[in-house]
Length: 177
Image 1 (tube, rainbow, N blue to C red):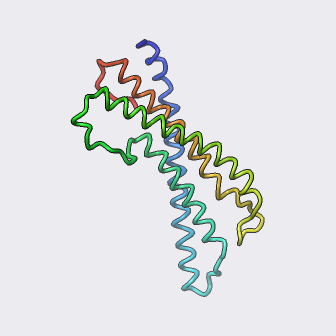
Image 2 (image 1 turned 90 degrees about the vertical axis):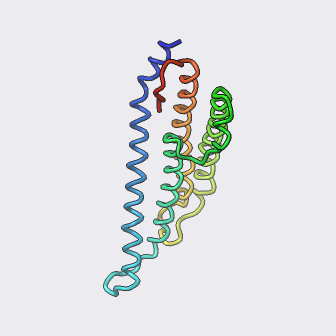
Image 3 (image 1 turned 180 degrees about the vertical axis):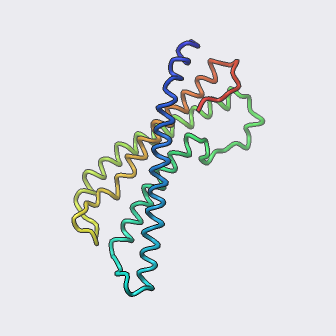
C-alpha cells in the first residue's frame, strides 16, 4: 500500500503547477481590477481622460473571477472556513473522518459548479451581451463558476488523497499538500 502512495505522490508537481497557475491568474486579475478602477476614478476628475462605460462591467467580471478562483486556492492551503472548536476533544480518527466527509461535500459542490455553471454559461449567458460592450457575450459573467469548479475539484482530490495517505501511512508526521 505504501508503494501506491509513493507513486501517487509523484503527481504533487502537477497540483503545485495548477495552484501556481491559479494564483498567478488571481494576481493578474487583481492588477487588472486596480488599473481599471484607477482609470475610471481618474476619468471622473480629469477632463482629458475620456470616461469609458465598459470599465465598470469589466471590473465586476474580473472581480467575480478572482473571488471564486481565490476561494478554490483556499481549499489547497486549508484557509477556508472550518469548524475546529471540538477538534481537541475528538479522537484523531473522527477528525479525519469529518474532514473527509466535508471534503466529499465540497467535491460534490465542485462538480455541481462545473456542470450547472457550464449550463448557465452556454445557455442563459450566451443569449445576451454586456450592456456597454455589445459585441461580448454575457456568458463571460458565468464562466468563473465552472472554471473555479474545476480548480476546486482538483484541490479537493488532493485533499482527500492527503487524508487517506495520513490514515494508511502513520509513521510520517509531514502532511502532504
